[in-house]
Amino acid sequence: MRPVWSGAISFGLVTIPIKVFPATESHNVSLRQIHTADGGRVRYRKVCELDGEQLAQEEIGRGYETATGTLVPITDADLDAMPLPTAKAIEIVAFVPTESIDPIQIGASYYLAAEGVAAKPYELLRRALQRSSKVAVAQFAWHNRERLGLLRVLDDVIVLHAMLWPDEIRSTDQVPVPDVAVSEEEVIAAVALAETLSGLDMSQMRDEYRAALEEVIAAKATGERPAAPQPAEPASAQVVDLMSMLEQSVQEAKATRGEPATVHPMPAKKRTAKKVTPAAAAKKAPAKTAAKKPAAKRKPPRSA
Image (cartoon, rainbow, N blue to C red):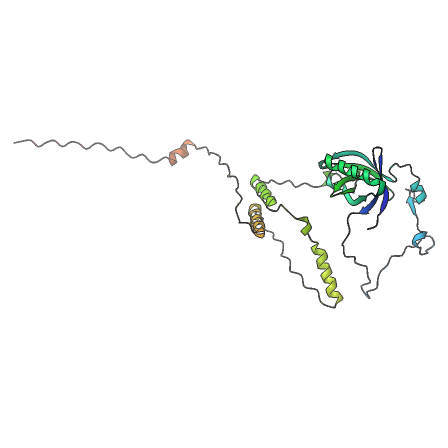
């Protein structure tokens, strides 16, 4: 693995020379543009719009276009001469708790390595990050711009995450928020489903789209016909019963894991006492039976 950048970490008065290696790699299947009529490759040519000549890469520079359309040439020497303390250094500005960093700011990741005399200060910073249970916020200049970075420890290596500046994060004010009512029972059922689906092993995750695309390419390359896709079920216009769908999802997730299917207990709904009017009470009251009079005693017959 070749380094993509060399510089130093500035840690107070300590300077740690480091090399930067890419921490990720892309496994995307690269597709070329072709002429559909004859299959010829479509290429882009870099042509000067003033003289129409095609240019080689060494003939191409950079420039900034002003509001009036004027192009101001900017050379590598101009960029290297800028008075930036972070031009060749990753300058740590603060140590903060991990949970204070919003994941939306985190971008590409890089491994930092140190050798020789830089090994000891590198190890010192690594242990300081581990023991403090914090991450370091840093600034560095790379690819013609100053960037915000995050340093943390992964295994025994310091990792640099490029980050977006706060003003590069768009506000959520313009995002429509649904205005719907959700019952407490539905929330509890959704939480039960989330707990059932917990414990994911990320190492088992697989890019199904890339695998399917590779199968299509392999089939067409050998003159075979790709397998026909399974027909998608049409979207239903019925009103969905969220509670039954959530409970069914919990049972299916448990069945996949080989767990016994159980119904998640739902809180009983509170019953409010209904007011009973006197008229209604009279209707519901049992009918009163008339009291029976005691039987009259028979008089003994008169003797003659």
